[in-house]
Amino acid sequence: MARHKGKTIFVSGALPSERAEITLTEDKRQFARAKVTRLLNTSPARVTPRCPHFQRCGGCQQQHVEVALQQQSKALALSRMLSQAAQQPVAVDEVIAGEPWGYRRRARLGLQWHNKQQRLQMGFRQEASNDLVDIQQCPILMPELEALITPLRQCLSGLRAVRRLGHVELVLADNGPLTILRHLDALQAEDRGKLEQFSHKHQLMLLLDAGDETLTPLTDAKPFYHSHQLKLTFNPQAVHRILFRLMMR
Image (tube, rainbow, N blue to C red; front, side, top):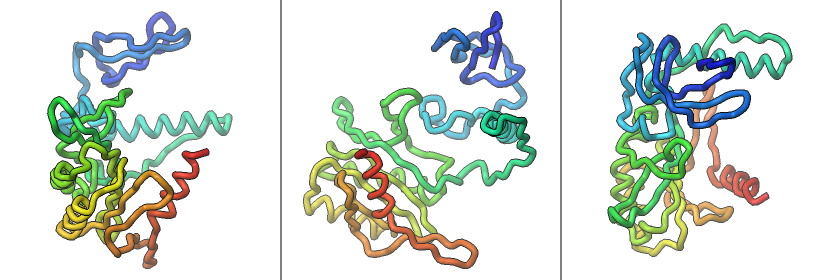
């Protein structure tokens, strides 16, 4: 964040104590937004992003920042929101944090057939865009989910319905990965067979989403989590049905 002639400017890509040349991307009466075009000096808190897709992918915004500063900035942001809601100062003195990498247990990857390149793209959206970033890895995903990216793309690329796929959801339950595939047209028996083979080979639960309230499971296993010596089974169909009805309102 910077100030110029009394106006606050939110600068994407710059860290505290850094000086930079910037380009305005949004200019309002009370504030402006900008992006860095050239850094004039670098902060000691700046680190090399671990993910090769970081500059384009909209999934992460702070991989260029050391973990301690990330936690500090998020604690300050939470403090501001709580203070506004409570209409009095609220301090966030302690940060509860897990591992900085390999922690995400759920992700939705967009699927899009690229006519010019004649191949399937699979990944997250670019920041402020509907364009897909075709990812090869994602280090914030749990390793079990990240390991599925390449073989899953290969499997989907071999389907007859490859041009009519919407997205794929990856979820890691305690008894293994769960995959939900959104398809835009009815799948032929050949495609269903390939998906079943994939699910058996990689020991994952696979469900098909045709765009209505019902998910079609291709495997019999039920996902569950363990918590405080309890086995908590959850039903992806029930969650999907609730989300579907909310979207239809």
